[in-house]
Amino acid sequence: MISSLVYLFPLYPLAARAALEVDFSSKDSIRKAASQVAEDLLSYYHGDEYGQIPGILPGPPPDGGDYYWWEGGAMWGTLLDYWHWTGDDSFNNLTYQGMQWQAGPNADFVNNNWSFSLGNDDQAFWGMSAVIAAEFNFQDPPESDPQWLALAQAVWNEQTADNLRDGGCGFGLRWQANSLNQGFTYKNTIANGCFFNIGSRLARYTKNDTYTDWSVRTWDWLVNVGYIDDDWNVFDGADISNNCTEINKQQFSYNAAVLLQGAAALYDYTQDQVWLDRINGLLDGIERTFFPNGTAIEPGCETGVCTTDMLTYKGFLHRWMAYTAQLVPSTSDRIMPLLMSSAKSAASQCTGGDNGRQCGFHWASGKFDGVLGAGQQMSALGALISVLAVDSSTPVTNSTGGTSQGNPDAGQSRTTYNELEPVTTGDKAGAGILTVVAVSLASVSLWWMVK
Image (cartoon, rainbow, N blue to C red; front, side, top):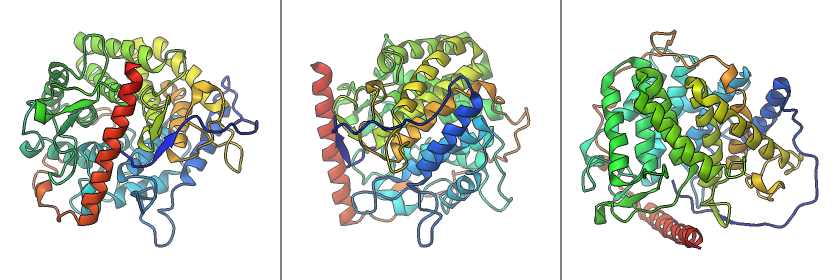
């Protein structure tokens, strides 16, 4: 997930405006504020308008809009959590329509329209949203349409394919799903973390230990290759050309958080102390790296260069920590104060836009940074709703009331990604641009980290 749109900070200060109104001692006030942030998030969505494509935010860059395909899936996942944690179903019809539309012709969240930029993590973000729909008993589609559980199983099954895991560094999943794409030789934490996350939650939901076994192997690979170190730093990834030995040591909050949520699901399912130890270890790293003063920061971004993608990460961090606090109650006293203090900081600088309440991304600064977008709204919404999570019902399984129908063989009969329609010259040029941007961003961020 690398966007070609880059924002440089700091920006010019804006005149003081009234912040989003929220009383954090009142759950009703938090819910009301969250509904306003959600409305502003959907102001960037046009998929329900005539002639537009349901399910996606405007894009992909450079000509279609600011957002890649995956971010639509991430938005629906955010709004599913919003619905479950607030009880407000105002956006459920849009969510249902968008996710079903993007399920794809093989009911696996793969569509040739997005093949030139399809990462395994991109597909997995849609798959993780399908897991949420199953876990929360979201409206089940008619039998003739893709089912939430089966959609997640299709994504997971396809990502076990040998052609996505060969070429070096052992067991790990490649970043890109199509061998014609730049990044196919990169094996990173987010692709493997999302696979681990889906598998762990499918294990909990279905009680099928095939998912457990693959999740354990994925965790072990991440540790053995050095992407998770002894101090619970979680690094970005490496290329197979050097057998994954030259690790890009950038740290992004969603890498650690996606592993945290998966570990929480496995602990809830297995009650194995090893997973509780890993949860607490990940929380050590998360607190140290991403909450240095009680407010979430994205250190690889906020000090200089942000891509459009990175502006979503803190929302995932909050939501996946909240899920952990609910499933693993022993962590709640540690997690919830962090989420509350960070949510207050996020809300206090939501003073932008024509309505005076849209949110920026630099929460720790205490002031609106002057840049608006869907990612900023998604992150602020994730922060607000995270403080409500522990009061909601626990995610269900197929033995505790789950109604979504699964198919353990889903996705196993489709053709390989290499047989997708050939990438066009324009697509290749776009992918090349993305690679240049990715390398540039990595260089700048690593320079800053060394400094």
